Image 1 (cartoon, rainbow, N blue to C red):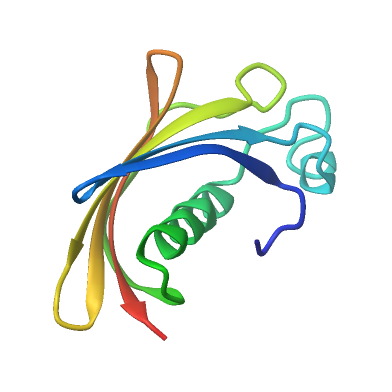
Image 2 (image 1 turned 180 degrees about the vertical axis):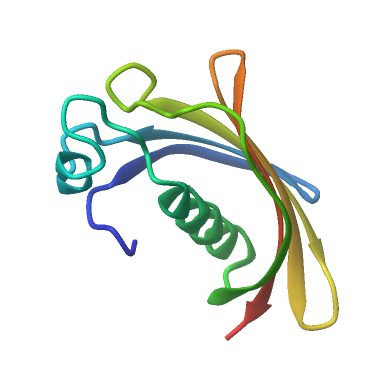
Length: 121
């Protein structure tokens, strides 16, 4: 985990190439003191890191983001209001990389959609 204690992975289930994870963002993490005081917002780059880390856990390989063709932040993730997230990861292996299509939600709200290619280190 790049950001120590930033989130907790509660569940991670995989059926074929589709994985679902539930996580809880730590609303007391240091990052929220600067992003933003009194109105915390989960940084998009942190969400992208979580997706990378979950993918690494699923495929059991160290990865780095090679490219992204689609990143849409659709709702603010405020850890005080919505710390619990559900991430679906559709992972397809290619020759030396993994293509990941992600949808991140809290309750019925889609917060993030991402399509990226992760290369093995």
